[in-house]
Image (tube, rainbow, N blue to C red):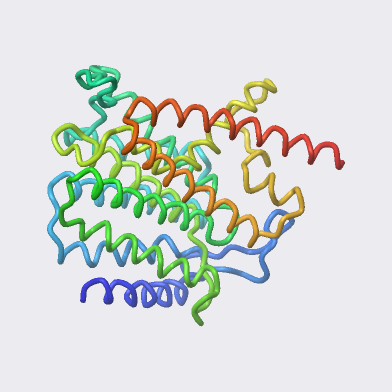
Length: 337
């Protein structure tokens, strides 16, 4: 019953926040870089988070999950202010860092990267906290960067959460994950609105939504692979988020190879490349969503049939293949000009 409720509750919160979006200055207007028609409310993230927060009072959560949910509010609010008045990237990063340190201070972090070749888990010691911050902020921004066409960001995050549940189930650690189910259903409701499938005025996630979802996803992956929980092997976490991390790391690598500032924005993200090749946004959405599902499915098949070391090696091979293909496609764009 609660899952049916969250499905419709998200529609209600979308309508509510859309109604007050002008007062909040959360409106995205079309310009030379944005091809949508007319003003679109940037309230998808607020709507999803509000629904999750309301329903969280009716499900069981341990202390870690409660802290993750509470700290993500910092990322959401600062993201919404950025959507309204453009605070700039530095303040966005600071908000992510502060929120991450709050969760880190609760005792949750990456302590090891799992066992390989049937040896003891490889512990990180003092480097665990640094890797935790880099991982959370990296994925948070990777999800934000891939939010370039309708439905893509939310479908990537949706696939990641669904994959997480499937991996946990096949790892033999199945238990009650009501909050994850609530997140999945709420994102699904938003996706139906964002893709114009239901007769509700269209809304965008906004930076607030993409960053908050990326932040939540990051910490849920760390939580479920933590030694005290260990619902999944740590190597499976990177397969949940293969496409957005390939995109982020691939862009940084190509910028470094060209001796360009790795943090400078450009059109080297995979959805930009495909659009510049002449594909429609809908085709790009279908292709990249399918690739994301394929990668997650492949990672699970490799891990559960061949083991953790093979899952890690194939992940790296797929990344190198991704970089090679993206370079070839980028060159095709250059040759057209």
